[in-house]
Length: 488
Ligand SMILES: O=c1ccn([C@@H]2O[C@H](COP(=O)(O)OP(=O)(O)O[C@H]3O[C@H](CO)[C@@H](O)[C@H](O)[C@H]3O)[C@@H](O)[C@H]2O)c(=O)[nH]1
Image 1 (cartoon, rainbow, N blue to C red):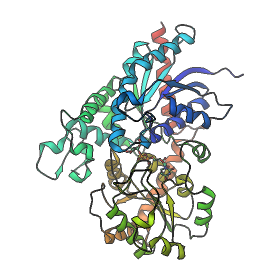
Image 2 (cartoon, rainbow, N blue to C red; image 1 turned 30 degrees about the vertical axis):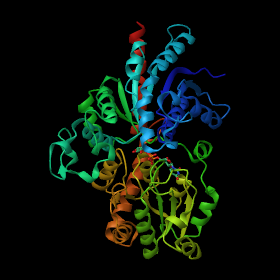
Image 3 (cartoon, helix red, strand yellow; image 1 turned 135 degrees about the vertical axis):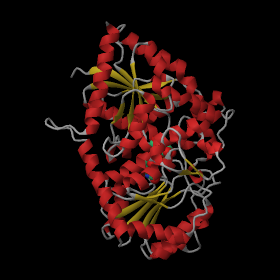
Image 4 (cartoon, rainbow, N blue to C red; image 1 turned 120 degrees about the vertical axis):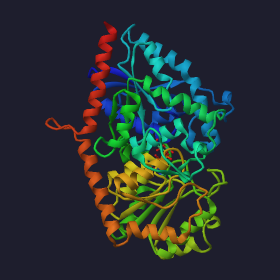
């Protein structure tokens, strides 16, 4: 059997949109010949066991966690299955993994024959405490932020400065990130709106974010060429190596074996798309956790109908319903809408979860109306598909800002679930991105340009290494050097 290089320990937060890019990272590190140990809580590891092919060298390791001891439902080991408040609670509870993680690292060092420690720990950006645990064992530590640089830079600055608390104005600047220009109160997530000293989530952020500088490096799921402003912010703020290693995306095949099954088979979706003209279909989906309000849903449906747009829409129960509520789109959508769009073969409604990658990579897909979750953004741009942004949480508002103002590949249609979006505005934005006009052509041109930049960043040939490949190599050089020095 081939002898593998040193061990890299990967530890993502317990959420679909964190575990999947970490898995893509694990596969890439495995391809480079390193041993990979992938750490997570028991339920998540059991799901992953089914995902890994039998010849994979990636080692899955359980870390003990009892959700019920933290006031969570006993099976609550993944934020995707939880309502927003409990997902925050899972995040807060995750800091209790520190002691078990210490034990796990001690065992790994021991198992490797005393002193042959892992070369590197790469942990989630939500787990700042893993840095000092890794350092206790003299192990190099890097953070992997599965977001882009710019969106995360705004988010980081927002949380640490709370600029909206120091002004009556609806608009404000970020004191340490003036390059981002003005922000508006509608770009504040519900969590930021209520941020204050004694709020548990604020306490979490105020501990988590500043401690990133204690790590030995930070990786972003983005590209050097197009995300310079955000990456420069972290370079001056943290004073540690900041590396753009994106895109970390699983292949369609791998995604089909992990986690949620789409309600419609990819083949049926593709068959439906095959009947449509190239560049004629709008894809609508709001990430892994978000949904819109009942009134927003009505306006969106009316806009699709009136504009006669071809669409695939991953419909979830509107706000106020449990995520796993029975699927009754006819109750949530305008009367006759479901039948009408079926008769006209104009739209496809998919229940709760769709085959996103297959849809985005189809030539009939013209644009993607989404929450601007960073995985969705990468999946869209990798296929040269422009976006219509409807951010709803976390750094999604600033991802949208980046996509509109810096990258020029998106128009924004609404913000959050309280936004009184009207059918006419939605129609206008659809027309801007999908119609036959100068703006739509420009947006498409830029999206295709970024598609090429992404291809280039990931080229890994004897004679040419793209920027993301070089950045990964830099990480390992730094980690190996650090290991040599600490072994002296
Ligand atoms: O019907 C669906 C819906 C989603 N997905 C997949 O699920 C992932 C969704 O990820 P993302 O677009 O990033 O959305 P969220 O899960 O909402 O993202 C969370 O994680 C992201 C990465 O850290 C952050 O950018 C967001 O703010 C945060 O909400 C993507 O890979 C999608 O392809 C599907 O396959 N089918």
